[in-house]
Amino acid sequence: MRWLMLLVAAGFLHACSDTDAPGDEEKSRVLLELRPYAPSFLEVAPIQTRAFPEDYGYRSYSSLNDLFWSQEDLVDKTIHLLFIKEGNNTYEEGNFYKSGDTWRSTVEMKTDLYHIYGFIPDGVAHGGVTDVAGLNGDYTKGVSFTLSRLTSITPSDVCVTVAAGRGDENGPDDNFAIGKFGFQAQQMADKNFVYLLFDHIYSSVCFSFKVDPEYDKLRTIKLKKLRLTSSDLKREVNAQVTLTANAANPLSVTFTGYGTATADGDEDGELFKEDPTKDIKPIRLYPNTPSDFLGCFVPGNYNAFTLESTYDVYDKNETAEHPDGNLVRKDCVAKNSINLRNLLATGTWQRGVMVKLTLTVNPTYLYMLSEPDLENPAVKVSSGS
Image 1 (cartoon, rainbow, N blue to C red):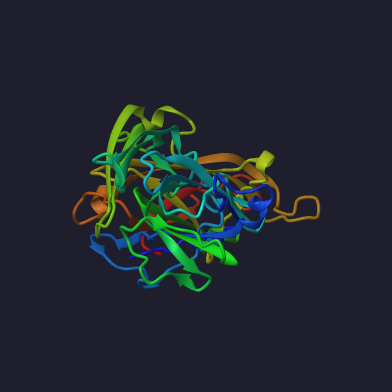
Image 2 (image 1 turned 45 degrees about the vertical axis):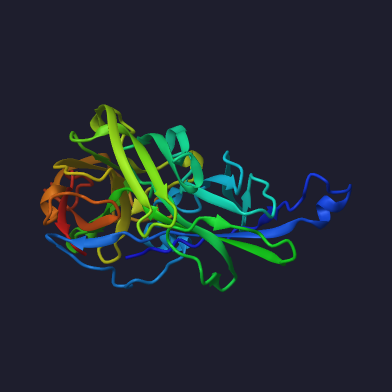
C-alpha cells in the first residue's frame, strides 16, 4: 500500500570535467527536476487490516496538505541525501529544499553514474547522520547509516529512500524499481528528472477531531496544542538503517532507545502548537468537518499512550469586536489514555501502519445557558471515522 509523495524540484546539475575550458562550465549546466515518492501508510481498522480506499495508487507529496492541513510543518520538508559516484567509494551529503515553487539542491553533480540514498525530513535526526558505510565496503551494493537521536513521538513522517532513478515529466523510466539507486544525468537533455521513492520507518495514528453537534450550538472550540506521550517509549531513539541494492525489500531498520520516558519534557510528542511568530493559529473545530492530525511513533509493542489536548472555549455571541465570540474558558486541558496495542490483532505496531481515531469534544456540564462559563469539555475517543 503506497503513498506517493511527489515533489517537483528545479536546480542545476553540473556536468563539468576537470579539463573544461573557461566558459564551458555554463554551457554544460543541465536543468534538474526532483520528483521523490513515498509509500503510503497502511491504514488499519481495530483488530483487522484494510487498504486505503485510494487502493494502491500514487499520490503527490503536496496532497498531505489536504489530509493534515492543520500541521503546516508536515509538507515541503527538506530531503537529506547521500551521493556516491560510481567508482569512488566515498560519499557526499547534500539537501534538496523547497524554494518558492521549485526545489533546489546543495550538491553539484557531474554526468557520471551516481548512487543516491537518503531520508526525509532533514533535521529530524538531532544527532545527525553517523556511521555511514558501504555494504561490505562497497556503496554500489548498498549503504548503512544511523539516524541519531530521532524523537520517538513526532508529527514528522520519517521516511528513507528505497529507490532512485531517472525519468521524464510523465514518470520514471521503465527500469525504475525498488532496490535500484542509480542515477545518471544527460547533458543534452532539456531537463533531468530525479525520481526518489521513500518508505516509512515509523507507525502512526490519525487523530480526527470533531465537536459534538449539540455542543457546537452553544460553544466554539479552538484547539491550541496537541501532545502525545507514552511511558513505554524513550524520549529519543537511534535508527540503524540498512539499504541493500537490488533487493526486493531493500530497507531494514533497527531502533535503539535511550534517555527518559517521553512524558518528561513539555515539548516531547508535540504534534501541534499555535505559534504567532510562525503565523500558526489555533484550529477551530467543527461538528461535521473533521480536523486531522498525524502522530508518528517508533514501531513496537506498546501499551500506554496519553493524548493531551489544549483549547480555548468561546460563546456564540459573535460581534465585530469578537468575531469568534467571547472567550469564556482559556487553556482547557483534556487528557485521554489510549491503549493502542489493543487496536491491533497482533498487538505490535509495524512501520508504515496507521490507525484512525475520532475524537469528539463534548461538554461535561454547563452552569447556565446565560452564563459565559462551563466546565472543561471532555474529549471522547472512538476508532474509525
